[in-house]
Length: 246
Image (cartoon, rainbow, N blue to C red; front, side, top):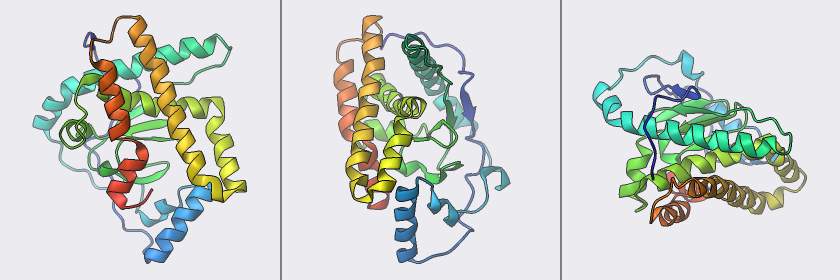
């Protein structure tokens, strides 16, 4: 990709030095976990958060890692570029339909994080939380993207973020809310509807990708990188590998 490094985006929250909180909350057996997962799907509320402790702000602070911060600094600049470029693209697209666009925030974290959608582990991959309109990512995921999933390259990294912004577009347009209402009225269609949401987020990522191609930001091989990333790190695959379920 052809891009010029700049500063850190104003839409980034760096919480890499915070504790993600513990699991000192409610203790339930496996049957209870399954029940909470079903309730989360049906009622579009993360009841699994009940298993966690307090909020991230209530956890004890952890030591930062200056060496790792320095290694990740180029990645922070890169995700800043992608985030700002994608959100500007969508601002312009939606303005043509007189639809206001409110920027999503990107939260950088390490290992685990307590979001408005509940507790999450880095192993589950980047995710978007519609409750607080924030995208969450552990930058160490990009190493896994290259080494574990065989999807190297900057456009592969950019695709992952653009996909999560795609979920924010779904929230902005009211699509996400309608889908979850449909899930509540017909729980048996939960999985097919979830798959459709993911595919549409891929499509929205492609809208941004097309915009970068028109502006000569893409280079030879970038599209293949994005396709590899889409195949390797779909949200369903990451959730299955981290928890055994989707």
